[in-house]
Amino acid sequence: MISKIEQTLTHYKPWQLSDHYSFDQQAGVMMLITDLAVPEVILTLRHSKLSSHAGEVAFPGGRRDPEDQDILATALRETHEELGIEPSQVRPLGALSDVLSKHRLKVVPWVGVVPHTVVEQPNPDEIEAVFRVPLSFFMEPGRARFDQFMDLSGKTRYAPAWDYQGYEIWGLTAWVIAELLNSAFDAQIQTRPRPERT
Image (cartoon, rainbow, N blue to C red; front, side):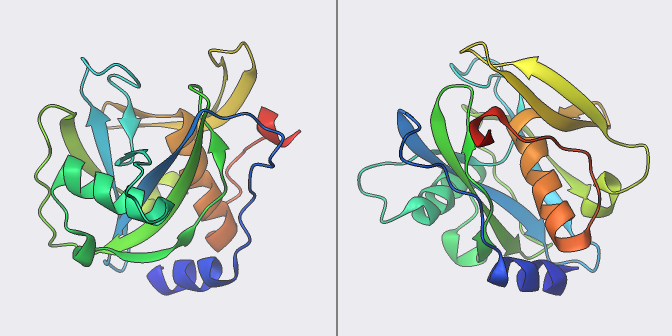
């Protein structure tokens, strides 16, 4: 599966937000997948006391700092800060499409491979839990549902969603997972054009 994902992302042309969209800042997130025959995606549960996305399942990531060379550097730095995973342990495969978050951040998701033996050391100020989900879980028939929700600006947004062992995987995180699996494996996970694409 890893080789198929890598091959797909090598030639992938991710959708990018055009200049006429107003976004406050950029952010980078890292979709970490393990190097198993059936890879797992490493997800976090954000601390319930954080000012944004509190208590939500998310990829490690955050806002771009001025000293970050590029958005990949942002994603790698945030992965280290949140999970203690060194940038040298991550093999970046490529970027997926830009997403405009509910807080008007331009979010660029990257996909990176880590050894399945990697040990996460979550930052307790930011992360309440870390868990892994086999990518095959998301492609099982009948697992996904389709959510419609309103963002802070009143726009309707759509995304697939999954429940995994009591963790609710939805919103931007679910959208990114679906994009990767639909692109690499034709998983046919239901999605609709997001409002920023219409």
